[in-house]
Length: 301
Image 1 (tube, rainbow, N blue to C red):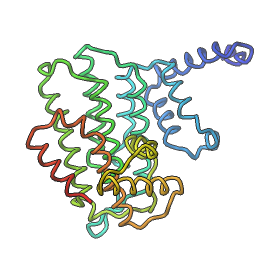
Image 2 (image 1 turned 60 degrees about the vertical axis):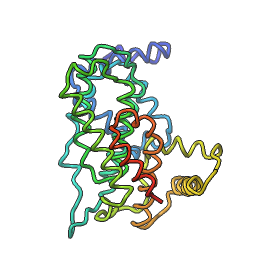
Image 3 (image 1 turned 135 degrees about the vertical axis):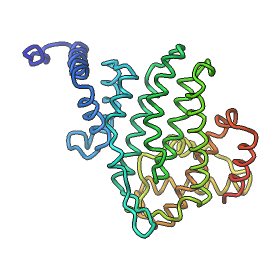
Image 4 (image 1 turned 45 degrees about the horizontal axis):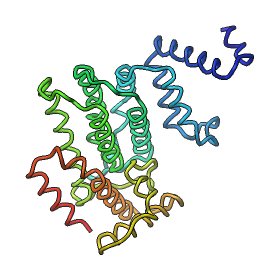
């Protein structure tokens, strides 16, 4: 420990190496505990030490990659950190009351998982190792598949797609059962989102807090960042553009909304998310599903 006390006398790059080495040693001894700390820091933005530091999540990610924890090991640790019993919402008279802390936790959890997948170097063409990662991911995804929060479902779909992109299965016949599970998850997510944007699954939910949950899924931030580049050519484009401008004002001002307004906004967010990811999904779904999805999307206003 005395060597770390003398760190202040060393160059910054050496200090970083020493800290990374220390954290890695701790992780190897206590993977579950260290992962718990990392997740707690990530999802709890009210810790005083980080309250005014907008870059702390980026710094946390840098530390994570500096210590170079194998993705499989980290996924196992993340999975062991999830307690499904703490993700259950209160039900009253057949109405599900969406607990604000649960849906905030779920959104921030997927923000962390998405960031890990984005930044990790996954240039691995070994099918067996890729399937092993997918096995871990499916266990995590399946816990959140039944979430009542629309934003969790959108985050799950976005994370699924980034995994498809960065962890492609180059030999589909290597594990047909796994492939079926991956494709089934995709179909289940599509059905869930279409049910949300067509009001089939939002008639019995009440939000405990009437503000939009941050972070929103990546597609929405991407769309909002391109507002000035959008040109309206028809009535549908005008509707989408007007909604995006309204959504931006809600996000910036943390607007207080009614339950019906929130449901309507989450429907539109689902529509925009599907529309953005539709090109990716179009190549891996059946012709019958394509017709069904197009019909559903065209019926939403």
